[in-house]
Image (cartoon, rainbow, N blue to C red; front, side, top):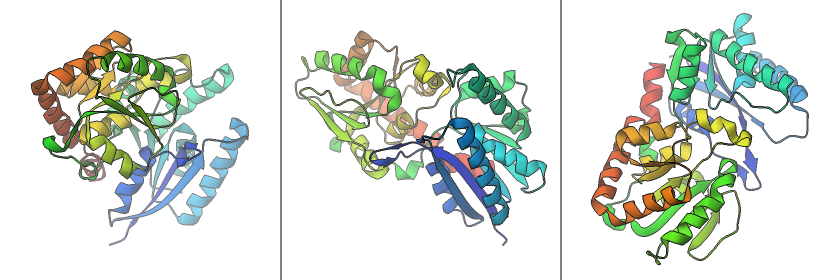
Length: 343
């Protein structure tokens, strides 16, 4: 059987500890396990001293050259800058099919109005001119409909994980005194809120521990442990042993894409069977609420405190949320979703 040559192109965010595991890794791992694909992966680092316009032109040229050499059949570009290369290749008949995977969106990507207009134009251009447009959240799908993108091109590919890769431990092996929160750049504005809420909670639950995984502030207090950046495998192990998990985001002009985003970490919490407390600003909260797989709150100290205490005190409700979290994780198994797409 002749294999389909797939070129997967993405930008990646890195910290001092290395690249952060993201959507491109999920797609990459899926394609590697399917024998009908011959995969070539390109990752461009987001961290660069080169001005964005020049960096974008260089990367587009490099991508087109590498695609021609590889003789790509199917091109998958994550974010508009990478998707444009696929559209160009498709226009000249150098690939058979191109997919634009929009893993985040915001009306205000750049403070510079000229750059932001280019971003908005390129997003819509790629959505219109790619054979398919994959969207990480239903909120972006609503945007595509308003943009009048052809319905048959619009696909929903959330930031899910492979369900079988997420460990789930028996109820009696879960540490009922452990809360986990995975942090990144987007969590910086809410770390203080979480710590203030937690300092209130431990008055009634002195044995409770909060484990923070990832990048962010290290202003810690008693009962709080900062684990730093872990491999995804180690991260999932810590998550699966936890009683509940926090996915706390807030909207700000610096992180405006959160509104249209999908929380990968919340998806991992759920697939591990861990009830989640999540703020309503991120799109994932809509499904958490629909499945009753946790508690959806506003980014306020009292709401977070009340949510933690409810799940700590009401074991029956916690168990219901746990069962629903597993169901949500199973229903949105990335292998299941991508098998349906590629079939």
